[in-house]
Length: 256
Image (cartoon, rainbow, N blue to C red; front, side):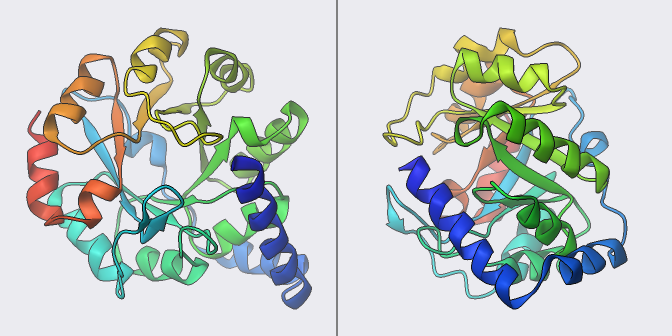
């Protein structure tokens, strides 16, 4: 599944590049206001922080919410206390677009993450051109040389990479490139099975000074508390927010 998602995202990016050459996207990225320092915003604190996700659908659950106004949803997330907004821009399975990210960036004052299957420098420039402050890099989807080069490019453009892992070996790969924001996804992107205890097993491999993000398998405040007790600084939440009253749900999650 992961290889198919990456291949589709890269193919779609190549199509966009044919219509909008890299030179134009680079110029658009250069003209953007500087990215927000996401590491400062997401620095560990006495209470857990939430990255709230704009997510219409997923391969495992199908359509979750129509989200006709992603900016309005993001504003409600910010009002509810989210520290950052994740915007899914993958179109085939998650029904997202870069326009969603642009609309969200224009509406909120907190960091915005482009969550997609990134395999090309073009996609990183697209993210900055659309106003992203953060970019997701999935270790399992990239060989080490590509991971290093994309991570370096994200930094060069003033953004922060959320480097996502699913195993001890992947955490070690993320740490070896100097990742400052490391996520552990409870969902295996090859099988889409969930393991909520994976974060706890891997957290100690993430060095002090690196921000630890727990991703997926969050439905209730108890799930957030579980991740927090295992050492998560940040919890990324999507489905539980788009299928509920987001402000009320955020209030419950942030109270743990």
